[in-house]
Length: 111
Image (cartoon, rainbow, N blue to C red):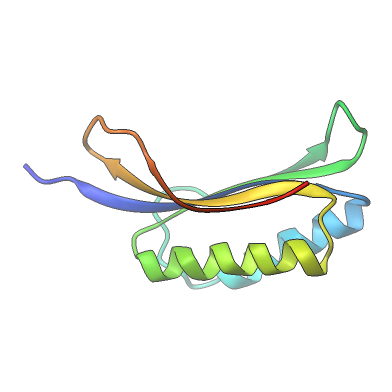
């Protein structure tokens, strides 16, 4: 029995203001409109308990590698332009239906 490869983009971001967090949420949601996704999208906004700054946790799974790379690059670009105070975005290859860990293909970190 074969297994399905899934492509995952994950980001943990910290912003100076809630408005910047909202802007990132909107940019990602607009990009995902009509995309073929695998499972539910996580896009959780909150306040970082250590710094008191606005934060966002994003987790999106895709069936197609090209779609995942597009969203990874979009978030990476917006981390510079919105701007993000600190955080990271990464893209993973995940072997679902099999008990294997994920392989990180790319990561961008802003400190």
